[in-house]
Length: 284
Image (cartoon, rainbow, N blue to C red; front, side, top):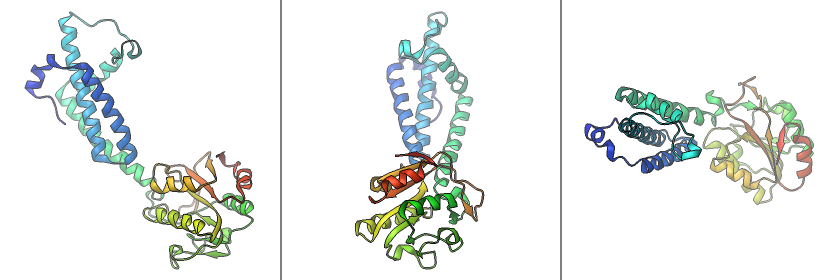
């Protein structure tokens, strides 16, 4: 997308505003979609389309107002279905001048990259490079009270086990993905891909094959991801903490860039889960 050519400028009187506004609406929908998808290139294409059509619209509008001898009374979008004067003023100020339009495009391109990088980093331990984000003791105690104990922690560190005290635990050295998980499972998996998805798939397999009888998991609330949807579908109860969990370990005192969700997978202690985890946030 670039600035209007001389021919486009001279033919602006042929511009179809209704078609242009529909294009803007479609571009805004695409912008939201590609922002969620963290696709910087497609996000920029959508924003470029929106800005280009907004520029065409204000250039067309200016020609219409000049031909009518001035600007009419300001009306709200809800009254006319068209952008109101305040909205078009913002578009005009930022986009009508070719240099300003190019500046807006360049700023949008940089912002697209920043937005997508920030969104992706939220799923990889706040870009710290550490896997060891250890669960606060109050959440561990709630999990133990819910299930009556913790038989297996498949993704842990020996330091974390000083508080978790699972009967069996697996670390990076003995790789929980290669082991069986019998009994009551507590899982706070690595938050980076592909590990988090692999641990979620493994958990659901262990539940499905009746080795694991129930599980409580702590993950980012990445409900838009494949593994997030998988975990939500397998869960019997959920807790969405009111604030971001403050982990300890190598990232002591730090919080991730996004919130978390705590899932109960099983059927034995649904009410107990709701009772013990309601102290942290909304229960579903």
